Image 1 (cartoon, rainbow, N blue to C red):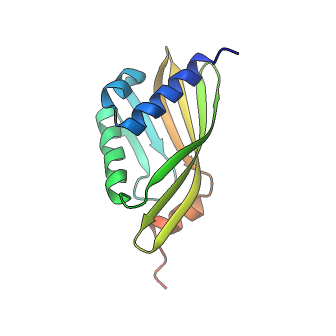
Image 2: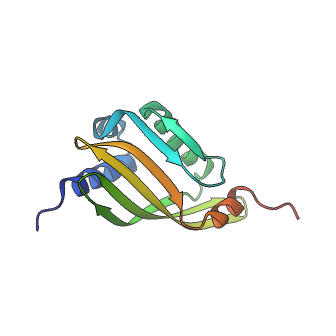
Length: 134
């Protein structure tokens, strides 16, 4: 079976992200890429343009440098979209996060135009980033 072109695009993008290959990511993303981060964390919000996305990814790496790992569990694609389910493990002080996320990528002309990241269990993510002060 021949892989769907958008499956190849997503896997190429994920490989480039894991390798820190900004040049390849710029080639795979639209110049005006938009990334929406949903949930209740310091990282929520909207990013516009590759430079903002790279800065966001670098900040996340700095905060979770001792224990941040994200692994792709599944990728589903169509002609216009990709849905990626991934699992993230992060450690911050004595707090540990193990959470799944849904990442939806809108694709046009074989480039990723827009990404939306949604925590599957938003309360777990919020508790990690905003611990209660009992």
